[in-house]
Image 1 (cartoon, rainbow, N blue to C red):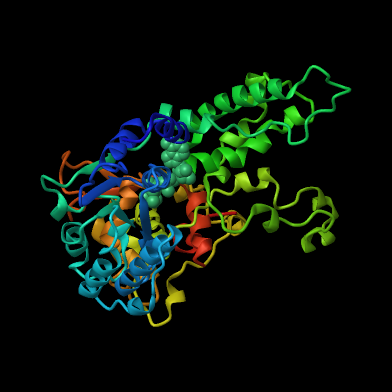
Image 2 (tube, rainbow, N blue to C red):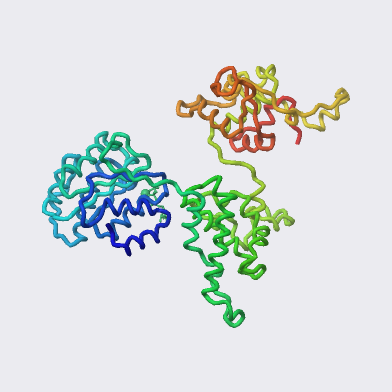
Length: 484
Ligand SMILES: Nc1ncnc2c1ncn2[C@@H]1O[C@H](COP(=O)(O)OP(=O)(O)OP(=O)(O)O)[C@@H](O)[C@H]1O
Ligand SMILES: [Mg+2]
């Protein structure tokens, strides 16, 4: 077992992992023998890699970590394994001639090389394969062979870190250590341990002589804790439920959240007023979207005006990058064929089926199918139009069968649909997102049953934007047209 102080240190650094840390300490103690193979498994961001490597570091067991994410082929993994072993032995003070280990072509060479490297060592050596289930171009024998290395080579222990435990290794005698996902309380406890500062530059001492660093730290922790709860309940609960996403979202929002405190509008404990004032931060999805390009570099730099603003001076006050302008856009980036599917579903819902031959029958010239655009003015101006018709897009959508949707979908597209665009899966996904709704039918029946009827659950504004994103003017295909 680890000495108590080290165990305490580990538990302080990784709270809510007591059981796992204690198991690891029992399995990998410097003084006692270790099992030849241990499987550590759990969903992403549950602290598997960090806890295992930090434990081995702290307990001073010689070890090498090979991350499968950094190995592009199976052979690459083998070569990395040997060089990582040599590196860690050299770091531990051993002098090794590297020349005999220049090549590691296959698993048997790896076994021989590891045997040679470790044969003169008295103490144990641990090889950690991190993310081995995601190894690219892995030979089928990779996992079973590596799993047996610990039995073949004395003093060697293998740790597999995987997302899902490999089923062939799920047998008695192989210790499995599960890292469960954190729940809400655990996530908040972990993140609350390191609160960021409210004031990057502490307030001047002459003005606020009572505001000591201790008091500031107390305020930081108090506000951060409440802020984390608000972020979880409004955003992270629904989108990024893992520790890393939750941490990123919270840090992205924090500076904007505390801005009124920094400029003196509110005090550090005015949490409720701050929440009301900053509620827009919790209503948009900006903070939960991961971006490679920072938003600051995306927006128009201050001092310069957009070209259109020059011609229309009244608009110079509204720049495109203001959060309010962004919030108005209701478009989402959807895959190409999914977009067409949704457009086809909308047309199938709002057009009567008898007009399909007119609108969607394939001609050599496809544009013939579109309607001649009747504007509101032209219909009202004609003497013959006595009664006004309600535009179709203002009516409720009517149900349509799946084959009609597919027929319209095919006629909207120019080329053939590739095999990889799995249309039925996409329809099932759209149904689970409640964009397409199944009408009637018995509960528990096959959702893609040919006899089932469907309806769309989105409106005209949205589908128009969706169509424009792929260059289709949906109004041109809608019977009766749309004015404005
Ligand atoms: N209990 C904890 N306390 C503090 N930080 C933690 C805890 N668990 C995880 N973390 C942090 O979360 C991040 C992700 O952890 P880590 O990479 O170890 O997860 P993982 O389970 O190996 O994920 P993956 O399966 O994606 O490799 C790290 O920055 C780590 O420090
Ligand atoms: Mg990991």
